[in-house]
Length: 278
Image 1: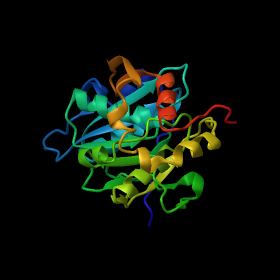
Image 2: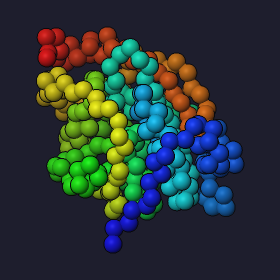
Image 3: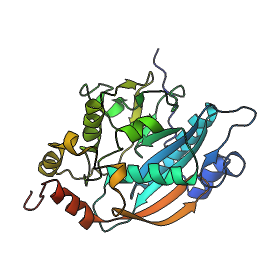
Image 4: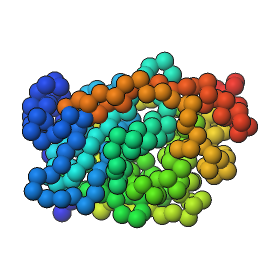
């Protein structure tokens, strides 16, 4: 029998959501939870790349906090929000979340979690081992089919050593898609494996679809393995600026600006020009 927990998909006001999650007693400001009466083996950072998805974020937090607390996890949730004015860059935003979370507190485990995906099983733990874990492998919108073998996106968990070995995500992809496939190429080049969660079924929340630019993505993706050692966690110095860090009741909000010009300069250094790409 396949387990499916009841997804809480009602939209609440922030104050009501904080009350229903009992945030004042279960969470430290910033969305940090430590289980009472037991010591957790790992400290988990959940990193959510975000922009303009408030309703999705509320629903995810309402479900995710409940699941993690039922599992007695020690965790903190970081919502990394890119300011408007530049195209969204999910890979860079995830890298920012990783570095800034580490700067605030030591974490053993990192889960990168899309804002529109909710686990359907309370037994789907976000703890990590030596290998990466792909959680959101079977979505309700795909009739729970695995679309292709090297599918590797949505919700992923890494330990610190693994993620630093692959140099994190590429910073060069704007808009939706391809940064996860690029990440898989990094793992393949380093001969690192991943495991699929035993509870891989997720519900995808409704939202407006983001535009794709497949020709641009293929120009960048074509040399992903060649630039992996110089494009990632170790090349972010001039690519972003932290505008503010806010410790909200349910999460830590890291608000950042992205230097689009510098990213295009890096693309040029790799011999990639996106001019006149349609």
